[in-house]
Each structure stands twice: as C-alpha cells, then as structure tokens.
Length: 249
Picture (spheres, rainbow, N blue to C red):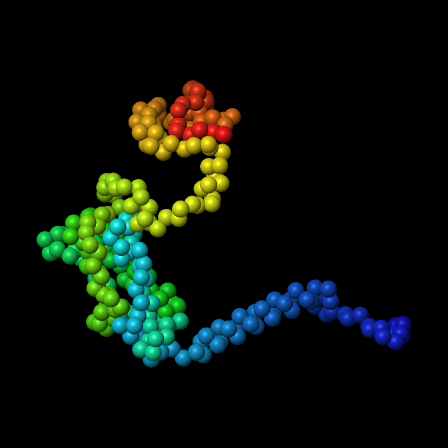
C-alpha cells in the first residue's frame, strides 16, 4: 500500500455498498427517520377528552337541495370542547348517527343511508342515495350521543330530485348549483381545434339521427372531419361526414 501524501485521504472501501452509492441510501434513511418522527409526534399529541357535538363541523354538497348527484355526501369533523379538531379517530366514534327522511310525513321515499365512514383523521364521510324525488324537501339529522351536531337538523327545501329524474332547468342555475368554474383549462385545450361548438344544434340533431342510424355505427375523426363508421360484410367502412355542430378551424 502506497503511503499518503500530506492532505490526501485514503479512499473508502465499502463492504456492502460502494462509496458512490451511499449518498442515496443516506438520504432515504434520513427521510424515513423524519417520517417516523412525525408519526411518533402525532401519536404523542394528546387528543381532546371528548367530542363536542355543538362545536363539531358539518359541510358538503349533500346538504344542498339544488345539487343532484347519484350519491350525495357530506363531511363531519369531530371537534373537542376546547375547539381543537381531532386528528385521529375520536373515542366513541361509533356514536355518530345520521337519519335522513322527507320533511312531509305524507311523502314516502326510499333512501339508502349506510353507516358513517370513519376516515381515521378525525373526520367522517356520510353518503346517501335517493331512490325517488320529494316535493317538500329532506330533513337530515346528525347526532352524537343523541345530541344534535353543529346546526343539525338540516332542512333541504324541496323539491329535491333524484339522479334519474328528467327535470330540465336553466343551464345557468345548473352550473351554479354544481359550482362549475367559468373556464376549464383542459376542456379548452381539448376543443381548441374547433372554431365554434353549437351545443343546441347537437342537442336537437344528434340524438334522433343516432337513434335511427344502422346498428353498429360509430363515429371517427378523419382528415379533420367527423365521419361515420359502419360495417359492410364484416369490414369497417367510413362514409361521408355528416353535420355535427362542430366547426373546425
């Protein structure tokens, strides 16, 4: 072995990992140690002793009558008497109970209301599905140990429609109820090839035409035109393009 000169260090010799591969492993071990420390600190933080039904929070689209979804949902956040949110499942988390029924006793409606879903972070997800519509509205009661939570009971003023109800309404009101953004960047990019899109024309022309079309008919874009794909003797054949409501640039 040659003697080292002044200021010169002897190269390391790794037994399991060569020196050049140690740095990524050190970073990985450091990240794992920080993660375990954060988990330990979260576990060591004392939770509030009990859940305060009055201070707990309830929010979500399932508490809005004008919003129609296949499965309506809302959230519950458990809060202690001191105003601190629970960051883990609180003791007695099974004590949250939700009942949903029509406001008017004259209306009979089947509503599927499963158990409250514990998200293990101090919050809960409540889902329900309507199998019909109601005129007078819905009454949503949220209880913890038989005490009303937050602003419970919540009244959804009718009419409240189920997902399959053919109940057309103004497009502006529909967009507002769904909290739709004024512009969606991805949709704008996808339709950037079209100069105009006449949705009303498509609504009037496309359904009758497609319902009367031959069986197995499909649509395809070819040479910047919309053409219909049909099957002749088992082979795909593209016919002439038809008016579609789209104007290409």
